[in-house]
Length: 364
Image (cartoon, rainbow, N blue to C red; front, side, top):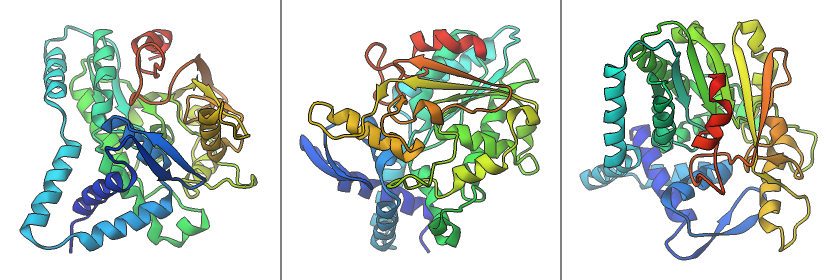
């Protein structure tokens, strides 16, 4: 039987070949329309792929990947090579990590909390290295990033074998247990580097936000969950998808509905929660050539909150990124983009960009 991680790596390679090419323009078929996108960097293309790919295409790709895998040594070595390329860090990133590790060992007394960065859907650990360095430069030297490679997100496809997936009533566990384990391990790493063995703060990007709520409900299996004292969510979709809006399909297949209905509030858990939302772009309902990109963004917003004309960070609408629960602090950051992939310091800063971090780092 073929190991699942090899299939994930091979499926990832197939998806890139299917959806993107080196030619200037390539058609991409999404769940709600067919659009054209211009050539992007590998990192941007990868993020876009995972952000837009419908579950039907994901299933088909996994089947192709499984059927194309053979027991020959050449095929196996090719798959392992591909997996290595995806999960490995660049030499510069490794140098930065060694530099940060040196800061861990040489840091003087520091009363700042241990900090753990949680990657969002489609993102990988290396996407947050600059963010980690910026935090370290501000004294948060005991900062770790949950170890996630892009193919890991394909593990969520394991839920398709359950009838609840197709009924839209899927529960998060055990489908997302792989991610919960990464959170637990990252907390160990941060606390080992910290001189303050008390509180742990989670900086949860995108899907990392609702995954954090699931993690806190799983203290019996993940002991480090009881150490978390604060969560700051960065553009996280935290509310259930409205199912009474025509054309809306819950891409989490019921998980967000489950989280909203079953997870305890931050106050009940005895922790602080701060929700950060960005207003990089406002979507529009109607198609027009002049506002084509706003229309595309609006269709994405609609799948999350039910309204295409919402304002958000380009992926998550403001209303979906806020928890209307007692004790939760909601902050809106003007002009902030959703993800570190494709962001820049001026026109498209994300939540972890230096000038944006200045606005909320005191909340840690």
